[in-house]
Amino acid sequence: MAIDQNLAQLRNISQAKWSGTPEVLRQLASYTRDLVKGLDQKSACTVEQSLLLCFIALAIWALAPFYCLVRVGTCSSILVPTRGAMATATLSVSRDHNQKHHRVRDLADRLKFSGESIRQLVKDEPGVVKIRRGRKAAHTSYSIPESVAIRMYARLGGQASTFDESHYRIADVVTLWGFGRETVRQLIKDEPGVLKFALGPKGAHSTYSVPDSVLKRVHNRLLYPV
Image (cartoon, rainbow, N blue to C red; front, side, top):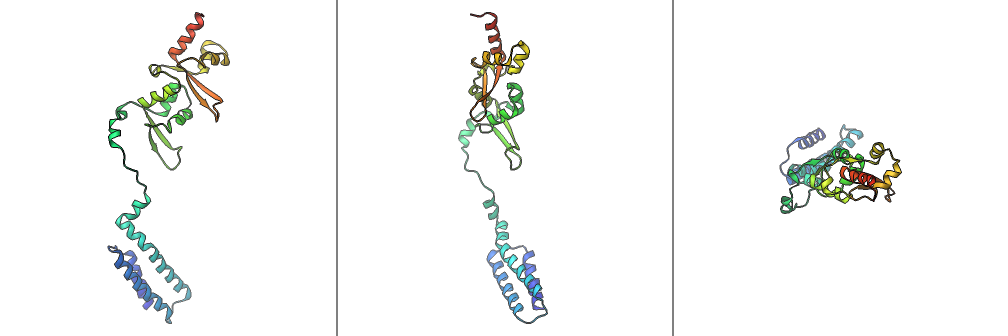
C-alpha cells in the first residue's frame, strides 16, 4: 500500500503545474526516498514492478529540470539561435525594399541563362532576399532587387543600358544567321557588352548572352567590314 501511495504521489507531481523549481525538487526527493524505503520492506511487489517504479522515478527526476526551464522560457531561448544586432541605420538607407524584384526564373528567361546558373549567381550575392523552406539549401526561394540584378549584370560584362533589352544565346544567333556555332562564338566572345558566365571548376566552359543592341552592332560590322 505504501508503494502505491508513493507512486500515486509521484504521478500527481508529474501532472501538476509546477510554479517553483526548488519546492518541486524537494517534494520529489521526499517521495522518491519514501518509495525506495518501501521497496526495501517486504511487500507483494514483484521485481519487475520494482524496476518499473524505479524507472518512473528516475524519468521524473531527469525531466523535471527541463520542464521547469520550458515553463520559464529559458530552454527555448537556448535551443533557438538568435541573430546579432542588426545595423538598422545602415539598412534604412537602402532603397531595395521598394524596387522591382526579380525571381530566378525571370532572370533566366531574360538573360537566356539556365535557372541553375542564375541560382549560383544570386545565392551568395549581398542584397538578395532569401526564404528557406526546410533544412536543405536547395529549398530556397530568391528575390533579387533591380539594383542587385544590374550589379550582377555589369559584373558579367553587360552594360546597365542593355539590361532591359532582349538577349540571345549562341543557338538563337545560329538559327537567325545560319552560321555555325563556333563561328558565332568567335564573333561575339570578345565583343564589349556580351555577358559571359564561366562554368565548370576552372571556367573551361562558358555561356554567352548577347543583348539586342550588341547583336545589331556585330551584324552591321559584318555588313560594312572595315
